Structures are given as C-alpha cells and as structure tokens.
Amino acid sequence: MYTCTYANMYVFVYIYLSIYLSIYLSIYLSIYPSIYLSIYLSIYLSIYLSIYLSVCLSIYLSVYLSVSA
Image 1 (cartoon, rainbow, N blue to C red):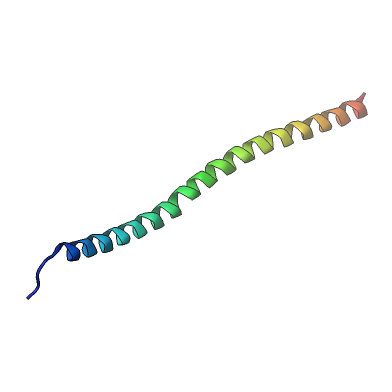
Image 2 (image 1 turned 180 degrees about the vertical axis):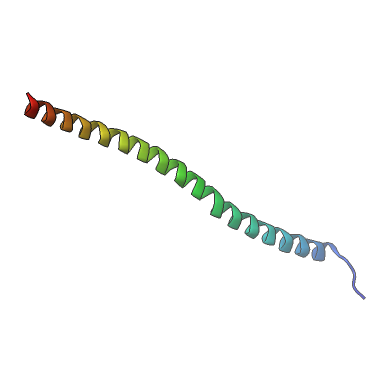
C-alpha cells in the first residue's frame, strides 16, 4: 500500500522543479543570447560602418579634389 508522506512530496517537487528549470534554462539560453548578440552586432556594425565610410569618403574626396584641381 502506497502512502503519501512529506518526504515523497518533496521528492516529487524536487524532480518537477529540476525538470522545469532544465527546460526553462535551455529555452532561455537558446533565445536571449542570440537576441543580445544580434543587438550588439547591429550596434557594432552601424558604428563601424559609419566610421569606415566617413574615413573612406574623406580620403576619396581629398584624392578626387586634389587630382581634379
């Protein structure tokens, strides 16, 4: 005959919480770092491209104006 004691309930709660936390963490770790990484890369690329294009454009204009003048 099976009797439900507090020890058995703690075991069931512990197993449930461990399964829940493992599923939650696997979903959390697969979604949120990719979001943060995409935001970081978009900001980094926008800053990098703005600096790169401004430098390249200034060099191009200085060479073009010196040759055409």
